[in-house]
Amino acid sequence: MTKEVKIGKITIGGGNKIAVQSMTNTRTADIEKTAEQMLRLEKEGCDIIRVAVLDLSDAQAIKELKKHTSTPIVADIHFDHKLALAAIEYGADKIRINPGNIANEDFLRQIICKAKEKNVCIRIGVNGGSLNKLSEEKYGRGVDALVDSALRYVEFFEKESFFNLVISIKSSSVLKTVEANRILSSKTNYPLHIGVTESGSGQIALTKSAVGIGSLLIDGIGDTIRVSLTDDPVEEVKFAKILLRAIEKDKNFCEVISCPSCGRCCFDLIGTAKQVSDYVKDISKPLKIAVMGCVVNGPGEAREADLGLAGGKGKVVFFKRGEVFSTVEEKDALQKFKEEIDKLR
Image (tube, rainbow, N blue to C red):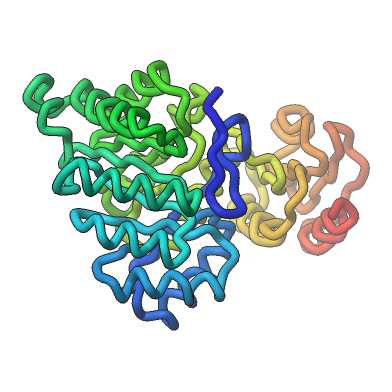
């Protein structure tokens, strides 16, 4: 089990809930636009929000942004150690750096000193495009180089008596990401931030993220996740929630199970399943609702459902835990089924 690390009001690691992250794509210094996007992310269930810090105005904006949201803010810093110092000073709950692109070790020590003073967590981030030079010389650009880079940086921080760390190693390759994190998790107990970087957009990006992140989480690896999409950041959070529910890491929701349609189906299974899914989307308690195409597969295959329906020719049966308790006309089925769902809310 990984050690616990506190990021604002959120604690990750140590068996705590897997925290969902995203990153704003507005200019951080634009308080109005960034705050609006943060609130949308927060409403969708984002636990930690990262912002890009390109200059001092971005770092200063963090102080004002914290007035608009209680969600922990992570400052993403590259190259300029002074921006890391400023971001911490203006209230960042965590900073993300790649030590390899900070000019020298003295600058890193300044960051460590300021983070200690403010009790701020640091995420060491390494990806395929930003490896430690010594690691790259020794291992090339593969999995071993990713792991070795991260461990070299961790060793430096530990020598400076800094242990308030989160580690991430990412690649645009699903296989490299999974293999590297499996190795890393066996060599350290720091919380791991996982994701597939530069995964793209659309179905391929969602699939790469589901396979990569999902594989690691099923193995028990990963304390916080970001689904990286070339899209509205809110979509990242939506899919992360779906992913966590699919692998049963989040059980406080209403799951709708439904069978694939086939020639036995005599009613609008597809339309009914979509409408039921939409109706229950805001239920935040562990429930299972079944929408089945016929009585052949209905009550039996969906025996674990708290409530279910199965279509027939002009008729629909309702069942609970595999036991039929009502038969209704197809035209009345959806409304009456919603009334039964409401009894379970």
